[in-house]
Image 1: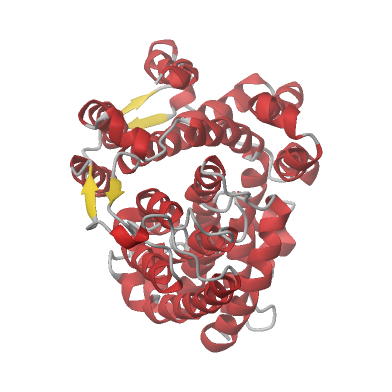
Image 2: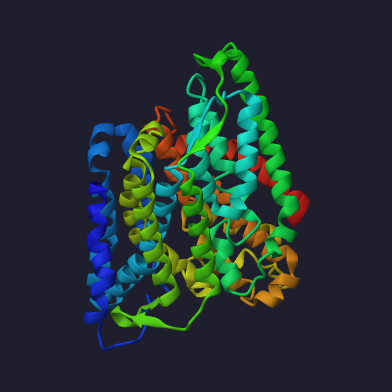
Length: 474
């Protein structure tokens, strides 16, 4: 993996920082009245992703990594001048070590293992077959994670529809269902629910209380997809791929990677259940928990084993290359760094610059939670910010006590559903969205721009979410 060497300095940082840890173990914080102007670099980062591929495609293709770093530094450098080196460096190191690196390592492991599983035989992308693939992915997403399900099934979907003229809608609905909505039933499905599990929400709570809502939305979207794909399939003349008359039996190549995917899911679950209460304090007392370090090291070992035990031919026939994970890694370092002030302002709650938004989830007359506002506020912010900390902000706003919230079903359901479902609204709303887009483009599918995708998501998803709100959260 020669192109992955850019991660080595960050990995070295993890190993070297314990030896250069500062004596101070206090956790500095940004002022609670931090102005919204500090979020400008993050907004510019999003606009760069949205506009540059259309306005300056050649420049963007060759320099998007530099653009991402620029917007990260556009926050870090002025913030260092205003707030001081210790404060800003603490947040930068904390973000890289505890959020960005685990995020990228997990994506890398799933991308590598799932990319070594190749569906052999003939699978023809008819409306019925495509809908079946989407339904299957939606079902398994809660058990192997939205990222795992997306990485496992996106290539078979693209391969089955290689002969089709219209393919964009297939990937868009795949992101809606497999990469997001399907992950709402267990803590394994999506990071926000995993954080809720760590806070004390029982493992099957979302299975019980989000099942009907998830099934309702999923069935509507699957029906819409089937109708749309049927119309487009007939418009294309019901094409069949060359050699379809010589159909081969379906099978799997690279089966050992199924074991690796299962190991990845097990490691994620382990890191949430095993707590030896051992951690390594690094820069300004940032704690690297043993269970998380163990998980990440084992995930990197799985990457190595997957590459070693999967034939080169299997990966080549699967159109596997490192470009999608490289694109995500480069863009998301800029997103994670420039997003620091937005998350800090949000975490300030009713004392921060976004207090008016936080206050919107409570009825001012009665003090009772407004579940429909919890659903929409958590969801809209999760569409553009990391949905995991957004979930925690509103979880804490609602009381922060898992036992209490599990008995207030409507509020916790609204927070959980908003964080998971509305991750589908933008490419950056959930980890696999951008990766699926990148894999599709590498396979020759001309995907919509950032705003073009939002036209799809708002036009299709928001009416469904409004209907969901009226039925379940009012």
